[in-house]
Amino acid sequence: MSHLTNEIVIHAPPERIFSTVSHLGNWPIILPHYQWIQPLPDGSVKMSARRGGIPIRWTSRFYADPKTRELHFEHLKALTRGMKVRWILEPISEGETRVVIEHDLTEVRRRLGRFLADKVIGKFFIDHVARKTLANFKRHIEKR
Image 1 (tube, helix red, strand yellow):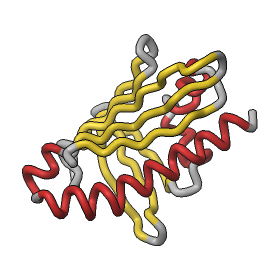
Image 2: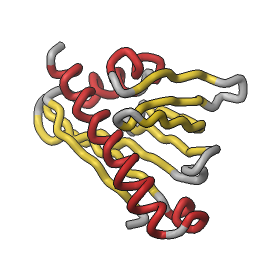
Image 3: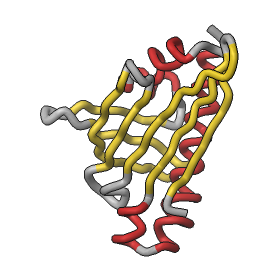
Image 4: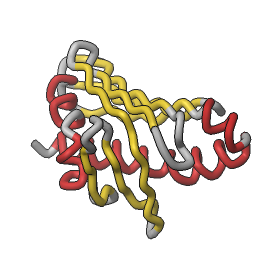
């Protein structure tokens, strides 16, 4: 499992979803499991969330591409260093969009081994946080 994929269908057009998810500063307001997001002078961002009662923090390079309506993260520090994350917004039908988050754990696996990368970081932390993130964005966007 060098790739971990989470997805959800949101009843909204991709443009509306992109305008919400691409503004990282709003994540702690919309997503209760996110603590804070701090932009750094070099253009990267420090992020903090919780997995249950466990605090998790990481630093990423972030890019939002309005043409493709994709978000791109590359983790720069901590155990997830080298992990690449891509958000894809795929229109399904009028007013309905599939939102996919792909985590590429290849570099994490190489450094930490398969078990730690796949089971602990991937399944226990990333999968849990990504599912909560998608579910909370869905609730927020669909109630508007």
